[in-house]
Length: 139
Image (cartoon, rainbow, N blue to C red; front, side, top):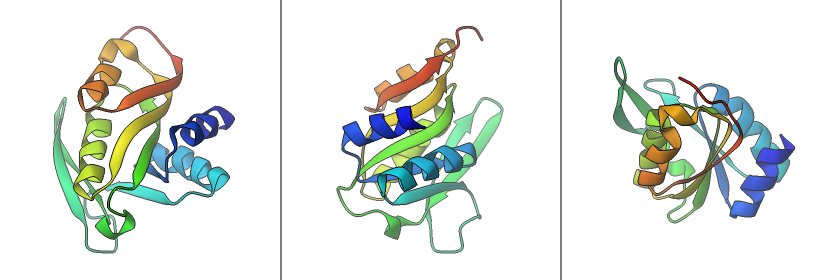
């Protein structure tokens, strides 16, 4: 957790977004350690408030992510934190959703990256810098 907190702190983030579900664990822990707001990015229909959302393609279909737009201030620098970066679909959709809410998203931090699946490249194409604690080669 120390590694994540140090990297997020160095990025200048003003809030942490965690993607459902394991991103809640890592993101909330980093958020608490740095005393920054935590923004949950949830699957459709899970939040008890008005939401904004984005639909995105999965390898086997599609899905939707939602968030409370009032949880972000216009121009707020938000770092994304999650456990695993695979194809990058959920992470890119999260960046799109946060930007739709008015956030600036420049960095994403992961515990594990599976580089052969191309997620880091995909996020870089979405103008998000990627850092991971460890990488595992192979499909």
